[in-house]
Amino acid sequence: MNGTILPVSLTIVLSYLLGSINSALIVSRLLYQDDIRRHGSGNAGVTNMYRIYGRGPALITVLGDFSKAVLAVLIARVIFVRLGVAISHDPGYLAGLFALIGHIFPLYFKFKGGKGVMPLIGVLILVSWQAFAVVVLITLPVVLLTRKMSLGSIVGSIVLPFATFGMASLLNQNALAPTVYAIIFALIVIVAHRSNIKRLLAGTEKPVFPKSP
Image (cartoon, rainbow, N blue to C red; front, side, top):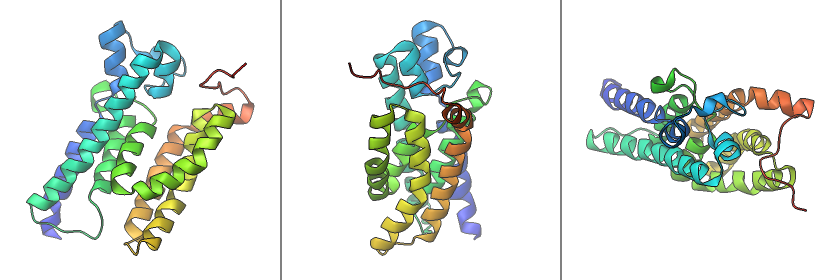
């Protein structure tokens, strides 16, 4: 137990600090001398960037938020390997959790960030691409049919624990820890979308993509 304290502590701190690097806020300040949180939904994430500034800034935000989560997972794996500590599951899950927390509550931006979807995608592709593929297959039609990214994010979050447990079991892997992490990921993202849920229920949530003529 004592041997895991150092790698766990390093992973938590570094992942949170990486997660706190909010791409939407950095891009809006560098390119527009503005704060994306003053506009639209007030969210510092990809969808609001797309609505306010367009495809280019949104794409940069995607790459930044995705990359920081991937980097957090890779660093966590290196830490555990270099310190010779083995645990029953991929330490990338722990890194992903705190990168996600950092993204939503960024240290450098007064603890008001995004809603965690893009960093979570980066984490899932590395720790369980199979579960991520299942989530995409189910949520992509939802987004395309409704044109509401928030609804897809919420549906994907609900599906994630089931997909994680199912794929881990199918592949004869340890399912307990990944599923617990998946549940926590899902709860965090759903809570972060609580304002979207209210708008969805009220029928006032705006679509991301314009309807084809």
